[in-house]
Amino acid sequence: MNAEVVRRLGRELAEAVGRSGADLIVVHGGGSYAHPVAKEYSVSEGLRSRGGLRGFIETSRVVRMLCLDVLSSLIEGGLMAISIPASSIFTTRSGRISTCNLEPVLSALRLGLVPITSGDVVFDRDLGFTVLSGDEISSYLAVRLRAKRLIFAMNVDGIYVKDWATGGVKVAEEFSRGMSIAPIGGSVEDVTGGISRKIEEGFAAAEAGVEVLFINGLAEDRLRDAVLGLPVPGTRLKP
Image (tube, rainbow, N blue to C red; front, side, top):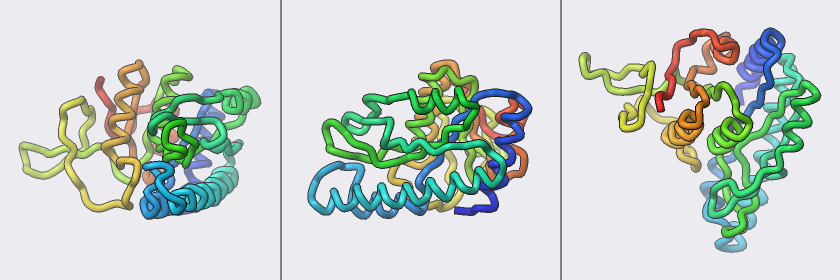
């Protein structure tokens, strides 16, 4: 985790909340902390062996460690935030969200706090346990809470597509179903589907009336401006 970047994002989000007064929920992924462990033990496939149960425990442990680091850096940046582990409010059935207790999230929002949650390992009614991605959590919360905007902050400028005029690649200002993603290099292996999963979950929210943006969180002030609804470089999903 890049603590300096997360502190800056905390500052930007605090500024956006202070200027707009809007409610905000932050969902982050597991990245290089959790994905390798989850992959090693095939945690997403559930209770296959005692080794799988060990993987469930170990993935839960590293996710808790990451969440504490992220929360600490966001608070240091000035964000009034509180951690709400996804495993404490979500259960799944065959890998998809089955139940969600929103009361901790709503209670935090009523107090003016920013709930922070993440991709996590959760109990599953069919599999015993599985991996629940931050992307699915984000889309679910955006739709259920009727969010105005869902923002995916990444380490690239948006969704890349082929530029047929030049033969190169470019950031799509709008991205619709059926368009092809152009690869732009390697990334940390993601057991929950990477950019394709983000796009699919994003469309689920966009088709429910939520504005969905993909932006570069490494670019200073871009996340703040996106939260405020100001124009920023990136990609908007067009349902």
